[in-house]
Image (cartoon, rainbow, N blue to C red):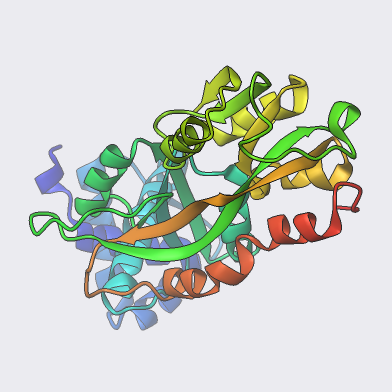
Length: 313
């Protein structure tokens, strides 16, 4: 059997009968007769070469093949409902939000941003990471709904994209509390010769930090350059070195006292952007999420900074 021989109209009728478990109710909902509905399901069974239902008294029970076909039909028609909802600007039932983020984006920042969706059973999150250029390509092809980045995209009439500013946070000098608690360093003046872990050279703020050190004629001993913020968090926690990063990255370690703030980098801020296509089909849940982003995504880091390293989580 070839795909073009599969009658999706018959498959839709089967799907509703399988959901309701009752031929009469399904016929009433589909505005057709019970005999017509039965005939179309039999045609589908003939095409597939196997029975989809067996009768147990008055009940229709799915066969093993019927269970398999139902699983695929759920995906097919569930996505169809999602498509219609997307085109109409809203969604009934489950909606899939496909979000990409650059590898340098803080995982804590992302979790803070997505937290309103975590208890929303009507949303399925699809999250992926990669380089900005790769993610922007997928966004332009409508394979992603949103890209999170720490730099805006430049205007390009060949690939129109919109950069929406979500918030910012100054970078801090972070160190293990067992060694640095109670100490304060000026950035960058006091960093000469100190062991330090830095964001990788692909990170938006790295060139700014290097320029600060060059201007101050300061040369820290760089022990690690890390693009992935989750890895930089682990190095900051376990190495004994100092690290330069936004407080939101290490919000948990600051709260439980494993790490402490040794200095501030007021000249350096990490910026957070939501990049979208200027499509006319708005996604209500996504719009609501982005509206709340400045208030929610950095709140944990801000609270930690205010409370100090010994604050409770």
